[in-house]
Image 1: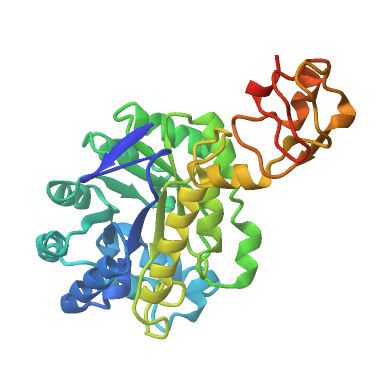
Image 2: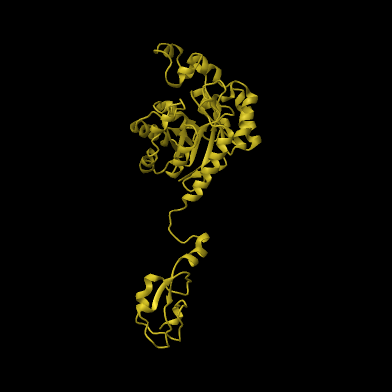
Length: 354
């Protein structure tokens, strides 16, 4: 299965595709957003992703204030949840400018829209849509996005298999171009989170959704989980991206910096090449090694023309050539007669026996 994200094909036989989720790390400054786009490109990302939402359309100020304090990663926020989302909201007039900047540096522009108007606004600027995990149980939004007939990337954090299956059904009624992304939606950047990534879900997705491209939307530090996901078949990787983990903001702490991003891309591409196609064979780069390390059948004594060859006359030694016999072919040789005089120490060749 292959699908096209902008100008790039993604799929099982394609190299990993990397999405730098800049998200709120622009910190309200479009010039900073421009710089992060440039850094993402320099670091090896294929796409720079933002988020289109209006605070009042994604969070309830009353609802969050009614909770017993702010939870999870939001505990460390100095502002209310609603205020943080207000600060992170992208002005609509940024979108064409961000798209233009991405085109300028040669990176795909992407976004996750979180309300119907944002979907319709972003549609003219994107080649695909990313749906965040939090909207996996909102079928009306899933259908609206999928109805745009563009590839859909669906993150599946904090979801049950039933919820994933229902979401996939809704989306694939409108489009078959789906990237299904395993995800764990804990943003605390704690080492303990590795215990909950559950990369083997990718095996389950491969079995249940064979027509989907697999992916990983990741929030852990480093790129251990990325390499594991690629080994399990993921070909689209999304991680948050920043230039400084110490900046103030909701996403900086668990985001990946340019130097680590470059290491991740290089290591992932090496791993992808190393995975190969699964066909066992003598590879082109080991053909000479096969000569010097494999054993042929060598003679332990002189043999006169017409004399039968016995097992005692043969000894497996390195090197061997295609003209000779493999040790397991000794039974084909024993009992046959030499067609010429042969000498101790030489390799027995196919042309030497009847």
